[in-house]
Image 1 (cartoon, helix red, strand yellow):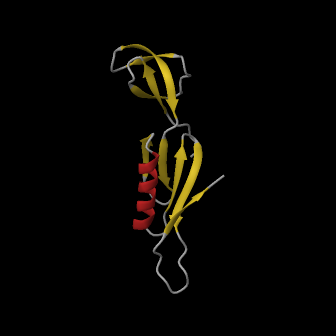
Image 2: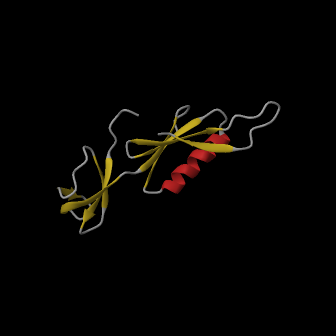
Image 3: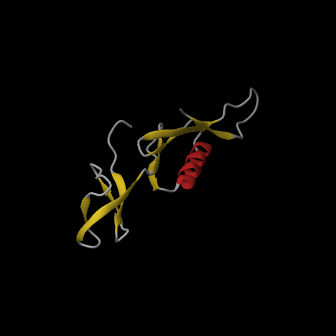
Length: 116
């Protein structure tokens, strides 16, 4: 995931959100397409996103960490052998993969391994 990702920003005073690449800084003026006027960047959002290392699954969740983690866990439960990485902004937050089964048993638990 070395490529640069568009960044979500919230604008003031309209409070609309938009994606920018490259990311503007807080306090910069940018054009709001919804208002059709120039607005100030209020805050940049380090959005949550997931990506499966074994298939095409890739999705952005904005600020919704819970749904990002839930989808990652569901995906590895449904597709044995898949590994899903979770990012917050450009920072790798966690890796989700199926737990190793004990010899002679079926895997029935899944866990999240938090990476440094």
